[in-house]
Every structure is written in structure tokens, then in C-alpha cells.
Image (cartoon, rainbow, N blue to C red; front, side, top):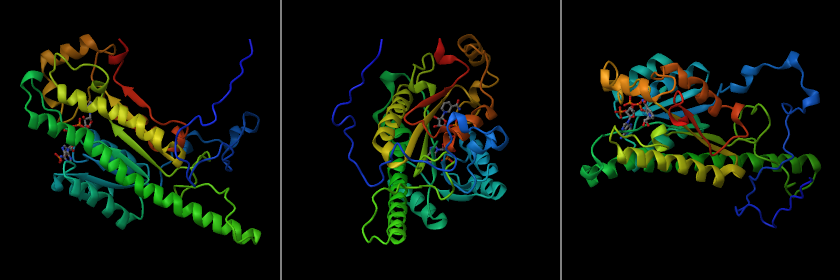
Amino acid sequence: MGQNWVMPDNPMPHDSSPHDSSPHDSSPHDSGPGQFRADSFNPTDLFDVRGRVAVVTGASSGLGERFSRVLAASGATVVVAARRADRLESLAGEIGATALRCDVADAGDRQHLINETVRAHGRIDILVNNAGTSPQGRAEEESLEQIEAVMEVNAVAPFHLAQLAARDMLRRAGEQTASAQAAGARRTGNSEPTGNSEPTGNSEPTGNGQPSAGVIINIASMLGLVAATPIRQASYCASKGAVVNLTRELAAQWARKGIRVNAIAPGWFPSEMTESMFGDKGSEAFVSTNCPMARFGKPHELDGVLLFLASDASSYMTGQTIVVDGGWTAR
Ligand SMILES: NC(=O)c1ccc[n+]([C@@H]2O[C@H](COP(=O)([O-])OP(=O)(O)OC[C@H]3O[C@@H](n4cnc5c(N)ncnc54)[C@H](OP(=O)(O)O)[C@@H]3O)[C@@H](O)[C@H]2O)c1
């Protein structure tokens, strides 16, 4: 039976802006199924992040250190941030990154991180909100101070950093739109802007032609989707649940402005946060019983999803949380 899709007058109650993208955006990379040419297709080009400026918080250990190494090895210009400056300096020296000390619980530090990155590198293309903290305790005994501290680091900081980075991304996209319009006006001899230029976002070609002002990747957790018990982490679970839905809302608000926001929700991976689980018989039994793949994640098993979300390979994807947990949440 045929369907008749009738759209309401204003299907998306977003404010329009000069950065709004058009369904007719095109680039040399766009091609219909009939124009696909296997001889000129290199699938790894999709994951290209060369020349993009990436900020990774919580880069002094664990997943954040790994994300920084992966982005730097893939050709991105990386700014590594955390509180332990000595660790950052040594990582930065090793991978050719810039180290910036930042306590993400401090709003001034957050502003400084974004300002300094833009001052030193001209822009931010990729923000990885990875810094996190995960104290344990029975819900009825968690202090208000602890609950607030966890929410500040795990939820408020990613929101504020995303907001600060987005302002830079939007400013740049606006400038590029204005200069494209001015160039169009000069070409046509028309002093009025043509009004049909779209932001190109990243200074590099964006792979498949979608305008891209920037990419934000929030590191949530599978514990933002399911309970942690028998491990007791109510404030952590609340904060990660907040990150999952923050990701949706930021994505929806900024989609037409060229900013994509997605999240990764890891299961159990080795890091300082989880190190007490490794070698502990009870924890290993807990994981092998509850995880369909019956094991912890390995450090490299988040590399692919990071590059996917950071690059144009995910250009039609926003507001999503990709769960990488060996099937834990599939049960
Ligand atoms: N490992 C897992 O199994 C797992 C699973 C799901 C989600 N995650 C998430 O992955 C992210 C990384 O955690 P991880 O497992 O890699 O643990 P980790 O090794 O303990 O790393 C946490 C990082 O966050 C930084 N950090 C903590 N508080 C900070 C603050 N106030 N300001 C700035 N940086 C701060 C730490 O650096 P400094 O101490 O030097 O500041 C460290 O670099 C977290 O968001 C965590 O919730 C981890």
C-alpha cells in the first residue's frame, strides 16, 4: 500500500541560521550508486582525520591516553588535557601533541583549555570528552559532595566543554559562510550575498560533502544505560545517563549547524579506573558470567569506533551512543 508522507509546516522547531545545511549539498566526493568507481575508492579515506585539531580530556591515563595516541597516529593535531601535568608532558613529547593542564571540574580551566587550543592551533575540529571519575558506595550513603563532584566532572564538564568548543566551531563556520558568499558575490558581480553558500567547516575536504563545523565525542558508559549493581555506583550511573541524553539534545540542536555529537559507551576496559578488577577472581567471574563474550574489552577495541565517530565515515550520524561492551547490554 502506498504511503503519503505529509510534513507539518514547521517539522523541526529549530531556529534557522545562515549555517543551515541544504539537502542539495554536494562535493566532488558525492556519488550516486551508479557513479561508484571501485578503482578510485579507498575505504580508509573515509576515516581520515589528518590535519584536524582534536582535544582529548582525561588523556593522562587509560582510554584517553589511548584515544590521544590513535588520533595523533592518524595525523590529527592533538591537545591532551588532564590534571597530572607530568604524565601529559611525557605523552605529548612521545606523540607530538600539546599538553594543557586542566581540571575539568573547574570552569575557568575548561575555558582556558578551549581558548588556548584555539589560540595555538586556530580551531577545534574534534572534542573528545573523556575525563571521568567513578567512586563507589551504597546509594543511601553517598555524600552530597560526592554526588555533586561526580556530576561536575562526568556531566557538567562535558556539557560546558561542548558548549565552548561549539562556539568556536560555529564562529568558524559562520566566517567561512560569509567569505564564500562574498566570493560568490564577486564572481557574479552581485554586491548582495548569494545566500546559497554552505559552510565547509573543516578546512580539509570533508570526504563526502556534508558540511562539517566540528565533531564532539562524549565518552559515556554502558552504565549510563543499565544498572551497575552489584558494583555500587549510583552517582556514576546517573552522570553517564546524563551524558547519553545530553548527546542527543546537543546533536539535535546543532545538527543543522554542522556539528555532530555522538557518544561511545564502553563496557569493561583496562584502565586505572578498573584496575582493581583485573586479577581479582570475583570481578573476573562477574565479567565472564555477565558478558556474552565472557571477557573484558582490550585497549585497541575502541580505536575503530573512535575514528569512525571522529571522521567523515560517520557523516550522517549524530545523537547516537555506540555501545562497545562485548554484548553486556544486549542481554
Ligand atoms: N575503563 C572502563 O571500563 C570504562 C568503561 C566505561 C566508561 N569509561 C569512561 O572512560 C573515561 C576514561 O576513563 P578510564 O577508564 O580511562 O579511567 P582512568 O584511567 O582513571 O582515566 C580517567 C582520566 O580522567 C582524568 N580526570 C579525572 N578527573 C579529572 C578532572 N577533574 N579533571 C581533568 N581530568 C580528570 C584523569 O586524569 P588526571 O587524574 O590526571 O586528572 C584520567 O586521565 C571515563 O569517562 C570513564 O567513565 C571507562
